[in-house]
Length: 292
Image (tube, rainbow, N blue to C red; front, side):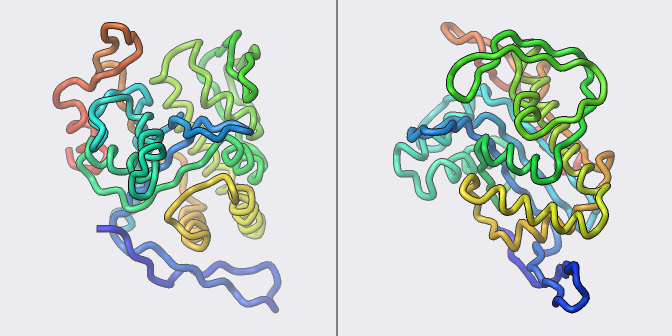
């Protein structure tokens, strides 16, 4: 059952003479949103695999927000196409005229894997991510350990050397993208944790702004995403969500990932393939939805 909208959120405007803006609010209860980032680069026309996959669960009744990230090399059953990497669902959907395209096949794949309903979907490319982070003035990330990659893949299919020192680091959108994508120095599991840290840091950045600056930043994010995002949420719905959770504390976001101890890694001819161990997905989903 997809979420419905009801008018409820009121956003004040800068001038007292300007009417306030009334936005629709997601219906009370639980809403799940699938967010995927695609490895789409300037000038490309072929469908891209998803580079990041996360599900956000918003429970307004319990005032609970949970974030679940899935590794892109996870081998899953893609409906109508059989077993393959979860990040291939977007390509299958685009190339085979799946109803709704790649994002809808990705939704169906994640629903099939987790056994939960996904109410809304958001797909954004690299340019949209960079623009959204820059629109809020960047983020500050506490880098947990030194990261060095002598061959980070660039947008033009070249390579560059990247380094992150431990400790708090101010990052613009382009730097945050590198931080969220680099994995040669560790693995995809640490990479997912970094991606979650970026999302939480973005929330914290907006939370610490003055109310008027929050309004301006959220409007700038909407502008930055235009042309780079595919979603079944309207701009008004996205603005409503952003405004509702603008003051959410980072510590209030529960973060979950499929850990390295929850998968079997490697198969003949494919050393990076990941297969979930029996029972691990069900256990992870119980934690994610708040049922222990």
